[in-house]
Length: 285
Image (cartoon, rainbow, N blue to C red; front, side, top):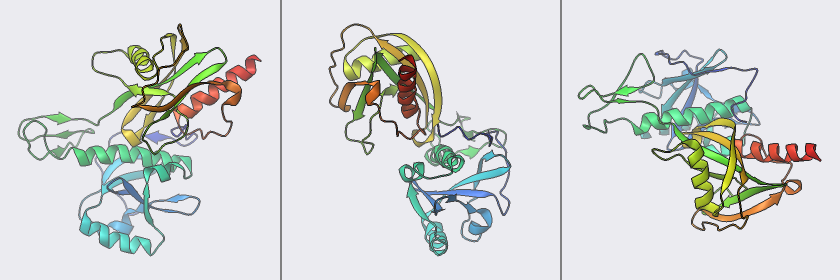
């Protein structure tokens, strides 16, 4: 999966530091990232931007000894910096485009930086009193100097569900989304319910079947949507007749493991779960 970058090591320990000349800068404008790609991702470094931006980049994390900082570009800053960067082959790319790039550790860096930078962007003012929030100097948090409200990074728990029916796996396609490939049943955990209850509810809401023997598989941070994804496998309990929620899905069907494609990219938990089911069934045979 995208976070599996060993032997490289990701460290998210908060540090209240300023960038060095060679610190990597992940610069966003709206939901696009400024980088250079020629088969390998190249990010800006601080000495590339320090003459163009007034706002201080925020320390995000490190991968091995490489420090990553994030910045949201303002209009004037963006125009001047982009003009200079484009002369060197840099351009803006959507997160979906970045997801298909390499190397994997820099893709993971982009997704994680997007998660943190959009959180900082969306939490500039106190939701309780409207005062401008301040960055804490000891932990990853913004706080209100007026009412004391504290805001921590948003992490939304969501489930990815592999429903099995003998040699078949329940696979689906989303409706009205840019992503057109096969997916598994998925959804967010609601207030007051366990994750296992989320699995049962989402499966029934989206395809109208009951499940049993819910077993945890793996998890994945997914910065594109500020999620922590929790993967579960479970078995069909009762009728296999599907009643598809057509507002959520364009397709849902039982797929024999032999028909699951072999060439799925393995960055996502969803695709890994599909391939895991296929591998288990092939080994059984």
